[in-house]
Amino acid sequence: MSTAQAENTRKVTTSRLTEMKHRGEKISMLTAYDYTSAKLVDEAGMDVILVGDSASNVMAGNVTTLPITLDQMIYHAKSVMKGVKRALVVVDLPFGTYQGNSKEALASAIRVMKESHAEALKLEGGAEIAESIQRILCAGIPVMGHLGLTPQSINKFGTYSVRAKEEAEAKKLIEDAKLLEDIGCFAIVLEKIPAKLAEKVARELTIPVIGIGAGGGVDGQVLVMHDMLGMTMGFSPRFLRRYANVGEIMTDAFRHYISDVKTGDFPNEKEQY
Image (tube, rainbow, N blue to C red; front, side, top):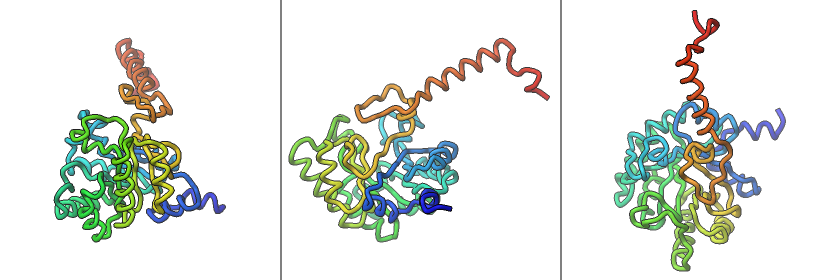
């Protein structure tokens, strides 16, 4: 096996992501919520799979990420872990399981890690949740930060518009990013902030910075799988590139199946015993 082939099959870890940043190799990250899709994403060569609380939207049909529970996130994470061999699997701690109570945060984190066998967690926020992050890190659990637009705080923001456009908020974001690095986070997601600000953060941190709507000057990118596959056509932010129109393909297949059943074309003689 060549060095390149070995690198492509080598298990992705938190330390490997740091290696990738230092040698200038971009990090690919995508969501998955079930065994079948996770297996496909992993076999394609994805570096990081995020079991995102976006499952609240795309799997459960909720308007925001807030309703999804810890039990539901553990269920999705367990399913994903069964399909993954290479990628690093990161799981979102859902709303209400870590904010304001570091003991509850640790208990939530331990449940996810023990019951799902996941490899890292992601938490939204900066200085406000530093105590919770530190307590989780002290238990030996890797934590990925998340700054900028933090969907769990949507009721506070009142909008999904770009964050940190004003100087004061941009300054706080930089301070929070450096704080998250200092207390031990292995990476940070920056969501929907100005590209120049995201590039500045990535340049000043030694840990990887993954962007979603944060421009190309960061160390990697993350998207929601259902969005990039064209399964959620009502959601079209500027940063989203659709790599397929799976929703249309599925609808056509369903209609074809219905037609074949109605006409008696399915099953034919070769499709029965």
